[in-house]
Length: 251
Image (cartoon, rainbow, N blue to C red):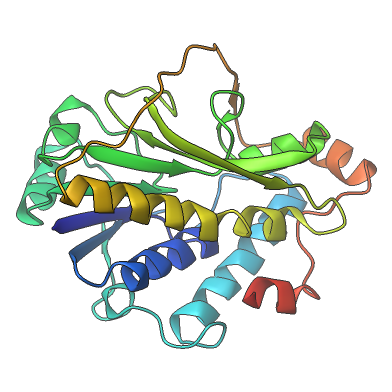
């Protein structure tokens, strides 16, 4: 299959894209990133620090300093920026990648109907939160702040311009680790998330549509945390990131 991967220049997305390509080497890949370097921190110092630490990890990942060599699709040439997939130029870029399937992981743009219709086998998205309860941005942060005993990731179809609202393929959960940082908890979701994608792609390649479950519950949409939310998070004894967690990040 020709698979177009949509991601973002952050450590979780780059790690997941690299893992997917290594899990499924039989497919041909095109990679586009959303073109933004940092999360909108709403002016909060701690989120700015997290973004800088994340950017440092990205650089180290891409030169092989964290996990060893990464997939060449991520390093040579540098993946193209696709900041407006719904414009005529953006749609042309998607069509020229000749996708049978589009896979989105932390991509920062909403796809509209014309872009969604390009791949014959559709568009799937890996969301780092349990749907429909935690839609939107930094779902793991909000779940930890709420004291959830489990966090998780959801693989779902993108069928319209709704955010994290499409039919669910699978949800996988794991125990929350409040003694570890938000970053480590979030990164820990992506190995299972990539395994979900690989299973779904195997079914799609064989002509079988993965079983789906509609999202019937209303759920809630979360935005980037503001300074008050970050203060409550850290006031609960939680941390956004810790540079001493090198071994856990490598794992």
